[in-house]
Length: 173
Ligand code: AR6
Image 1: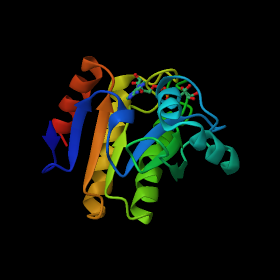
Image 2 (image 1 turned 45 degrees about the horizontal axis):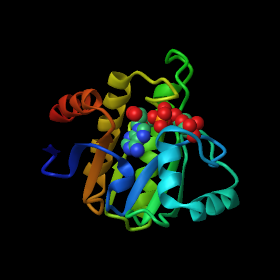
Image 3 (image 1 turned 135 degrees about the vertical axis):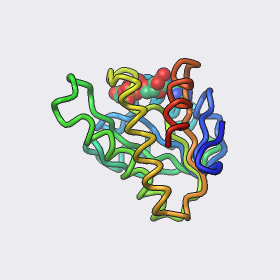
């Protein structure tokens, strides 16, 4: 469904199938691949992506790095590293917010207009989906308000349940 005059949409599915300027990867600090959405993106992009990531030398939690999209339909991948959930008092909310802000800042700097995000940190890293979604929607809406060059942000949810949480949160934005 579309929100904010079509500038935010929520879809259920596999982020690797999206034809957008950039898909965001929920990576780890090595940027050398892993499971979950990270594994899916590397599998779909092919070995060129891992080669380019090796040259980057990692990424701190909350920051973002840009690579090519290789065999993906997306032109670029923005790799960001979400926080591991430790109960919420170890800076996790600020780090997660930084992931969304820094990913979009990188996209805007490169002149990219369409960006798709997975639900960063809510899989292996254990961030509660409701809390993470509130942060994701708040940060994206705030960024879009100040950056007309970004036309559309897509939230890609892997389950119906996650999509329902995103739809609810976006309706309030
Ligand atoms: N498309 C969209 N969303 C997906 C896909 C996909 N193809 N596959 C999984 N998800 P996770 P994290 C959803 O665990 O919690 C990796 O090993 C998934 O259902 O991928 O940030 C990295 O290397 C969940 O909603 O990322 C790190 O070590 C969301 O993507 C670690 O996992 C995020 O789940 C990062 O953990």
